[in-house]
Structure formats: structure tokens, C-alpha cells
Length: 225
Image 1 (cartoon, rainbow, N blue to C red):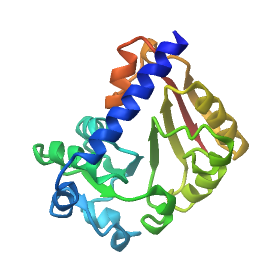
Image 2 (image 1 turned 180 degrees about the vertical axis):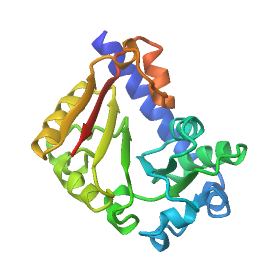
Image 3 (image 1 turned 90 degrees about the horizontal axis):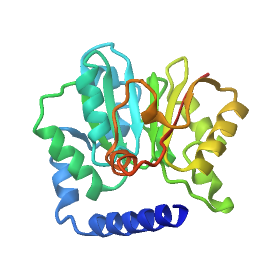
């Protein structure tokens, strides 16, 4: 079973990388899209003006092809959502989906989360980290989105109470993240070792749909600080 999981994930990784390289005109499309904020630094501290209301703002880092953030925005119209993705060849898929919908409470950003404090200033109410890159090698720990280095960055973007919801299929990353959250002062509000067996509200990402359909467990934690 373990070998099968590894082979499937390796295949998926290779296919996804191939797709990243084969989306012609992706950057041009994004730069001309009405649903993508192409100058996010200009809105730092002003995102509620962009949405035209004082509703809470929820952010997803690594929004991928957009299924999660789009469905969340539909389900919760009184929340403003922002999906951040650094790869234009992936973000174009989310932009195309969103442009076929009428969802005024959702915007997309092409940006690298390493510099997230350049985009937001104490205006995010909740952060979603879904199936982040595990960066398994020890020397790459600082690149993990749940590392102390990133938790410090998030301090600068949260409005007041800091809430993070984290999902992954990677057990080692999940265990690492729990230790990182608690060590930084976050309290565990909810946790699941097999999310899809629990009777809770959950919108799946594209990646999650693929692996949960094969019976692999999805790990989840909600934390607050």
C-alpha cells in the first residue's frame, strides 16, 4: 500500500509539472483578468475597500485550480475570500472558472507567500493551508508553510485573533505542523486523522478529491491563537 501511494503521488507530481509548462498565454491571460489582483501590494491594508464592505477576509495560500476557494465563497457569501497562487499556469484555471461565475466576494492573487507581509497588513481573519508542499528534507524546513518562519509572517497579516485551518494527506507534515502550531502558542480547536469519515462541513480541493477517492486519509487541524 505504501509503495502504491508513493508511485501515485510521484506520477501526479510529474503530470502536474508537465501541465505547468504547457499553458500557453497563461501570464497574459491573468494580467488581463478582472478577477485577478495584479498589483496586490497597492491594496495592502485596504482590501475591505476593494470588496466594498467590512466583512471578514479569509485567505487561502496555494489556491491551485480554485475549487476550494470558489465553493467556499459560494457557501459563505458574507465572507470575503482571497486565493493566492504563485504559478500562473495553475492560477489561470482558477481565473477561468471564476470568470464564468458571479462571485463578488472572491478575488485571486498571483504572489509568492514568502513575501506575504508585503501584501496584507492586519486584515485577515482566517488562513487556509490546503495540501501545502511538504518540503521533506530537513534543510528545507524553513520553506514549509507551517514552519515558525511562516507563522511569524502570518502575525503581520492577521487582523486580531489568528485562525489557521490546515489539511494534508502527508502524515509527517501533519505531525510536524501540530508541533509547530503548539510550540508557537496556537491552541488546537479541532483535529481529525481521517477528515472524510467525520461528519463535518468540508469542501474538497482537486488534490483532495483525487486521493480521498482512493481511500487515503486526509488529516485536518483548526488552530487559534
